[in-house]
Image 1 (cartoon, each protein chain N blue to C red):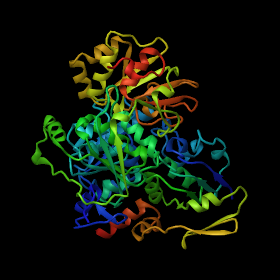
Image 2 (cartoon, rainbow over the protein chains, first blue to last red):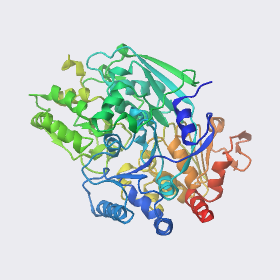
Image 3 (cartoon, each protein chain N blue to C red):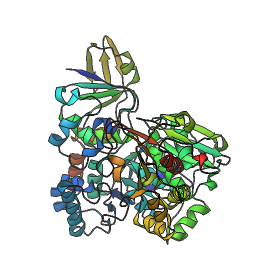
Image 4 (cartoon, helix red, strand yellow):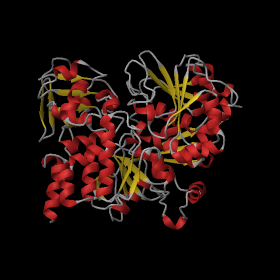
Length: 421
Length: 161
């Protein structure tokens, strides 16, 4: 019997010939990702750091993104603590305010590569499966222990295979696909599991695969994986990473899966995830006409160039509805610059969009675009939990950049096919 | 001892709102906001030894550890759920918070039923019926027995010297 992707990569990192699901293995990840939460992580082990130091200065990657620029004295002090730590311990990979959202940076800077194992103190660490890596979220305490030892335990997960067949219709995107899947299998449908995507995946660019893998945790998955193909190789080449720098891992053909799910992509419609659970998914026509007060296009889920191209095409020469605030949140400085160069930012701002600095912005409700009681926000982000945007009496709906852009014009949830042909 | 009963998909924002994650990290800062948006009576009334019963996928969402740190700090003795989300599950091991995955016990529980837990033998009694739950693998029990991941790590580092 062959091995799944998860079994193969965990066997490699455990230096074992073969591993089976439920086996506990000890692994050394290639990188440990932290963001603004590096401050409380460092504080936990201040005494230990004095005694033992950081196990490997190339292990941690720290990106300031969650509350940037600092919103108050407390967050500013946290950022300062992190900068001092980076200097003192000569941490190699540090990205200060404005470079981007940590997950985008991990991929964009070539810090996550195919066949690598990455852990991070953020649940959306699962994103790097988009380029064939094994990546998963852990808590702050485990990140602290990893800083000291460089190793941790992982349970070998069972795997689910999701076969994407056929071609998506016009006006329907990767975000609709992943929301449809979560709606069908539920927010716990892949609990503890490794999810492998296969089938007609060539129609999805690396950016679109990122959107899908990013939402793996919203179905409970440990990691979400796309096999490496020409598109991955080309993408990595475009950021200066040659093929010799990584070794892709493919699942064996006779690997064993606890579930195989088939999707006929031409059947998928534009969808919206309703409050307050990501798996509360309906076709957009079931909620059309619902008035909205805020729209958010961006985040680590849908804040890349291709997402803003879609939004700009729709919003070109149009105006955002007077009852709506449209927030634009690029996932990185590079995306911001590329979008500037293409005139996309111009188009979005002319239409009435408000540009936010590359970071997590309103997605987690700490600042920038907090909602008021009774308000509705339509967002391209990954979570619509109650209170997520800072107010428990507000509602968050999730959709693709096209659905959000079209809805921003009409001031209500609208089928994107009204504007996209 | 009180039993707090909740539904499926109790997520990390319900357990501890995201807006506080970058300003509150100590147990004392966390405690007043526990379950704030889900059940405002919880933080005021929870007592040492209380147990939480919940449905599927308890702790789904963010990797923030304030929920585990906070629930441990207020003295919740166990969370019994039909299933848990994995980051929360790991975090609970790291902080020595007892999680019991036992769908039958959750389904059997009715308000007022007496509940007792024998963690060492993997048994939970609800009303007059006993249910068993899987014990943790020995590698994981070692972390809990050490008092959590940081004490475990410190002991390991000391031994290496």
